[in-house]
Image 1 (cartoon, rainbow, N blue to C red):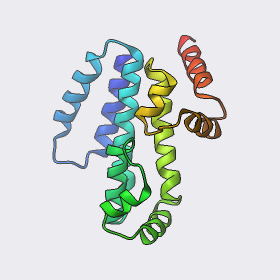
Image 2: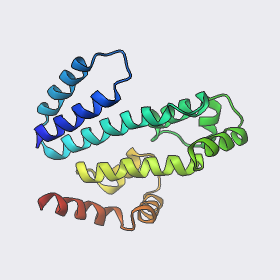
Image 3: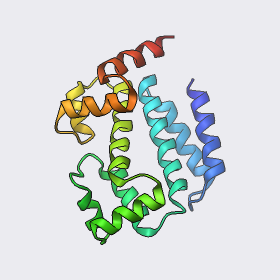
Image 4: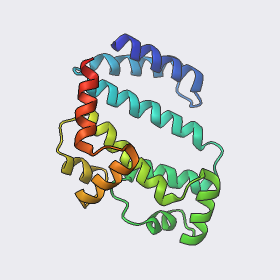
Amino acid sequence: MKHAYASLLSTFVIYNNKQSQSISEKLEVILSTVYSFDSFPSLVSWAMDTIENDANLIRRSGFSSPVKEALSLIENNFASIGYIKEIADHVNLSLDYFSRVFKKEVGIPISSYLMNYRLDKASVMLKSCDLSIKEVALKVGFENVSYFSRSFKKKFQVQPIVFRVQSKEGEGR
């Protein structure tokens, strides 16, 4: 299984290498990282994050500078962002103007993007670690566990605990 992940990630790196680091250097890092994992869930979580980060870089290439900066801020600080205004302030735009630009370029409102990003991160955590639902909610930026559970169910059509159980059952197959 580790070999399959290493091959998949290596192929992804070769096709999407846009940075100055050589492909052989990147492949060496990927292979050593993949083979260092002790558990399958942690390997899957790392692989998903790696692919997501590379895909985000590719996706961002067509966006304006403020939107790229906002996406980067969300990626690196999603759990600590309390208000959308914090993002607008970070990119030095008014909240109204930034919200319009973001929606025009990305296709969804910034608040929806941030919510989806947090919930997607939560789904990965629920699959790959044994933190309580409350701990997961807090780690992805939800202070209210009930609100987290309602939001999670709205997106994934199941409660977080059910999602976790179904994910664990799916691994056993």
